[in-house]
Length: 193
Image 1: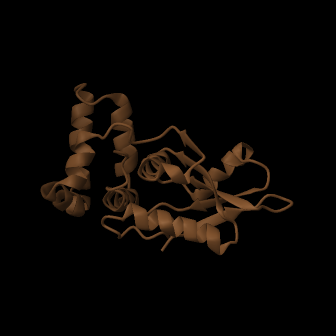
Image 2: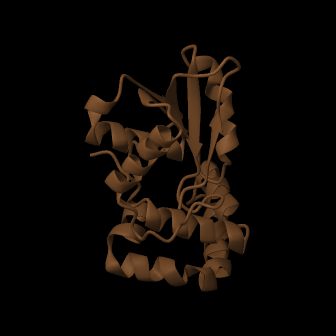
């Protein structure tokens, strides 16, 4: 299931662009890209897997199936996709994956602060190996220990400030950590080649 929103400009639209939001952000954030759209263009803003009411239990999500579902949403609204794809942060990584797998579908791809240009070894271990996925699936029980180890490493200068702050944000609550786990496992196949 994909939760989504559609913005239609005053005066109507004849085509639709697609905008993908960042991790832990609502699809409404993508309303900010409206000035980038050609006149007469609506905007489809789907929630990524494990966000809003979009399912996060695809383990892993098949990118081609998800891409086709988004195009079907455009068609169901009677507004064909115009080839404009916009992605912010995690949505940028998903957009880059789509563009590289089917470049002929796009006339313009805009990546805003895209995540995933370099695949983090820790992420790769967690989602691409059986031991990593097993650890990730039960990691909520060890979230407190992960926080303590991260804090210990940070205090000794072994974990850079930016990485420490980023990690603590994602570990701060059970809800946020569950979103991380569900999103990582769902989108593990959404990487550019």
